Every structure is written in structure tokens, then in C-alpha cells.
Image 1 (spheres, each protein chain N blue to C red):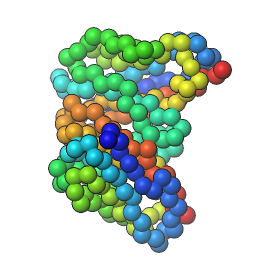
Image 2: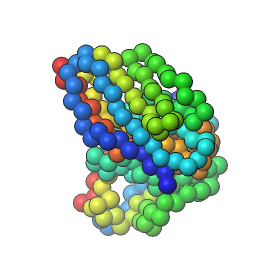
Image 3: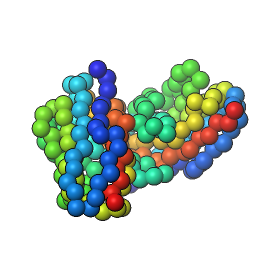
Image 4: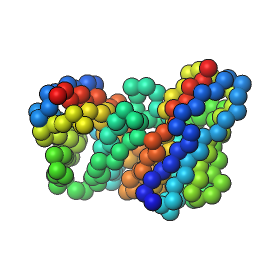
Length: 113
Length: 114
């Protein structure tokens, strides 16, 4: 079975705090791809990152960083020095061989000024 | 052009109406998708088109009818919908349908069935 779990339903932080969004996945495939998307109130899903199963190197993009650990089947996302504009729903997703994207339930992040 | 354009942005329709949602991309992508998203839920796949052919139908009721007239255009025809079909309908495209390729999503059509 393929499954993505985002245990944190809602997170609220104060601006400039660091915040980590957890993602745990299940798959029997040896090759798979993991994604993070951001969905602001406007509705559009914005692509943040793709990671394939053979590349466990962590990645940093500005204030965003991702920690991929195959040993624990986790692909966590950290925002450093959060800003009000980071407020959104964040989805972790797993892509199957068929191309179907399996989403986690999403984490709503609220960043207060 | 790196966008997926969806029209209309908002749609209110009665249960006896027939309407269509439109999705367009000019990135040369050969796979296109329809997703349905209810409030506070993740998107759920409805249909996948690959090279203009329907490759996946996730057991969607026949009141939803997809159409891919050409490689740039994807329509979703709606007929006799129910109030529970009210949702955000998202279109997406990718270079190919394989797992390596990331999606580009449109901003969606917010559908309300009255």
C-alpha cells in the first residue's frame, strides 16, 4: 500500500520562529518520488521540491530546507525564520509509477505577526 | 509560458444544468490531469490523459465527462451534478505521465452546485 501521513493537522507559530512540517510515507516501490506543495488561500498548488528515492541529500532553498531519511521513511520540511506569507496548507505527496500523486492530508500553517 | 490556465475561476450551477470546465497549457506537456479537492482535504485524482488518451479514470461518476481535444486543452463536462460535487476542481499537467515529472497545477475552478 502507498500512503503519506502528515500527522500535524494545524501548526501556529509567531513570525520569525522556525517550524518543521513532518511527512512519513509508505511504499514498496524501490523507485519513487516525493514532493512538497504549498497551497495558499487562492487555491493554486505551488510546487516546492521533488526528491527521488536514490537521493538522500538534504536540500536548502533560501529559508526552506528538506530532510529526507529513507531509514525512517520521512521527508520533513523546515521553514526558518517564518513569515506571515508562509501561511498556507502544505502537502507532502508520493508519486507512483503510474504517475498518480498520492497526497498526505495536509498541514495548515498559520504564521502570526 | 509556464502556466496552466483554468476557466472559469468560479462557477455556480443548478443540478439540471450542463456546464464545462476548461484547462489550457502551452508548455508542451503530454500528460494532463483533473483533481477534485473538497474543503480541508487533499486533492483526489479523477482522470489522467496521456498523449490525448484517457489513461486513468478513478471510478468517477458518469456525470463528469472529460475530454482532451488536443495536447494543450483539457475539458471537464458536467451534467446533473449533486450538491456534494461542490468543490475546487484542479487541472494539472506534466511533461510525461511517469513518476519523475512534477506537476504544474492551475489555480482551479471553485464549483458550487445548488
